[in-house]
Amino acid sequence: MSAESAGPVIVVHGGAGKIVPDLVTLRQTGIREAVLAGWKLLSGGGSAVEAVEQAVRLLEDDPAFNAGRGACLNRDGDVELDASIMDGRDLTAGAIGAVRRIANPVTLARAVMEAGPHILLVGEGAERFAAEVGIKECAPDALITERQHARWTALREAKTEEGLGVGGTVGAVARDSAGHVAAATSTGGLPFKAPGRVGDSALIGCGTYADDGLGAVSCTGDGEAIIRLVLGKTALEFLKTGEEPMAAARRAVELVTARIGAGVGIILVDPRGRIGVAKNTPQMAFGWVRDEDSAPEVFG
Ligand code: GLY
Image 1 (cartoon, rainbow, N blue to C red):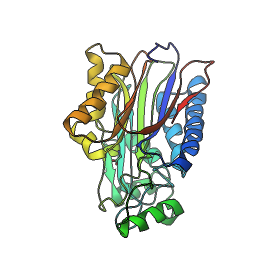
Image 2: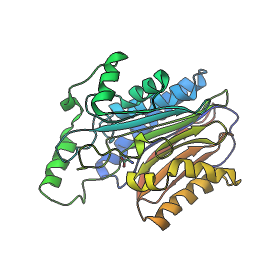
Image 3: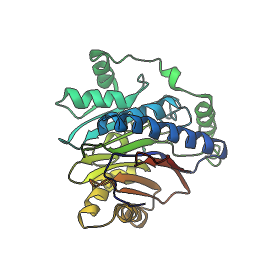
Image 4: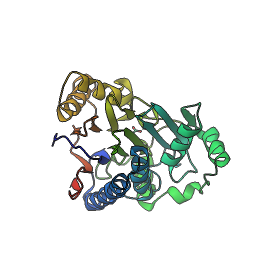
């Protein structure tokens, strides 16, 4: 699993947590499609940034995941979305938090990155910026699925979360044929979260980080725990000690288990194209492609 790859590499996740049985196959299919879309760009000479954006966009459009359409609802019954993206070439990054009218938050995050000088825009200001750069608003209701509405109703009535499923944040990391790395993450956050709550997926260094000298990482799971341990950057720093990417990812997850006891998952790629994946949750959908000939590997 930690084999070096001279060519491009892409790894995609669809959230750490417990996946309800009827979503397992849907999420595996979504991951397969996302990883192949990113791979198509990479194998045609596209950049790591393009590949991670495209992979995450597909998962935002897929209602089986907690991002874009299909995101979970906050206490008020609204969708509020977070996303971020980072380019390892020059450490430019963009992020958005708590937006309600954007179907593809990762593309808005990329626009923030490209426009500069700010890194993170939230709420109404982020939506105003979207209009300025020509990203169309969608009706907030267009992002709400029946599944998530039913889940919100159950939570409001204080029924158990058991059986409803958690997780579903999406993310991608890639290294392109020029050797540059990038990472992106997108989420609806936590079910029944407080309105205005922003999680790790909008925070550079926490849910997302990329540096050509270190690698690229996307995290999933308990956002508050990920923030408290600055988990994305922390996982990449473990690579500096000479640790294999799989071991570095595992060490980062073990750190969360030991210090906070929360459920998380991590995908990462190092500058040599080696992959790291770890989780302490029952499940995490993820997949990768790393060689010209290889079929995508998808794990539930
Ligand atoms: N990791 C996603 C969130 O907590 O918002």
